Length: 266
Ligand code: NDP
Image (tube, rainbow, N blue to C red; front, side, top):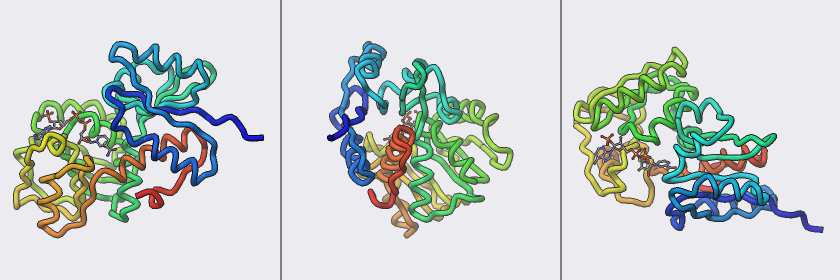
């Protein structure tokens, strides 16, 4: 007799572009689990009703994407430390009638970087951008051993605010600093582009005096002036597809207790 499949979905608006169903379906295949994973569209003002209906009709877990990550954060009864720090939730599930929320984006990035065999322990990391994605990755990068994290943002005040919010949760072995994007300087192991410049086709200019050994672009499937400049310096580069797969694997692991190997899917 075949078992009833466990039911999962990703909720967003818009949602058609999401690659989560194909990823989760491949993970289920590789781990021999019986699941369904759908795209769930919600009207902007109907997020709560949509997730309630999903869980009341047998749903086991939801991924949350734009624009509902902050809304999901507000709605959860129980949050993991990394979701609390990120102030955003991308993974939901029910336990004892309570809605649990986690944020797996940062661990996804850490796992992607480790799979590339780039160094994180005792590393000096420069992150460009201070939006939601940066907020989600600072704590996991620090926990993975980064000794210095500098956040450079076009709007300096936003980077300063992010640091104020996140600093109390970080290990004392990690130093944190905010700088303006037009003041880029220094020497780093890894530079991470967490601005949305590549999505809008805007150029990012990295000064010649800025030194780095590896370059990670969080966006994927888009031309990136950031990656072009890094490639011109002949340093190893990556786009954000590994991070996308990494966060999906971490959600899959939370829900199903098995962790597919990231290297098998990138
Ligand atoms: P947000 O909108 O929250 O933040 C955008 C950031 O980009 C802000 O810091 C903003 O600066 C900066 N920015 C925007 N345009 C420019 C520009 N032209 N020049 C310089 N800085 C600019 O976006 P997110 O943090 O959610 O996402 C950031 C990136 O990360 C996107 O490319 C997104 O696709 C990617 N991402 C990838 C994931 C993956 O799994 N691979 C997961 C999550 C995000 P300011 O504050 O001054 O406006």
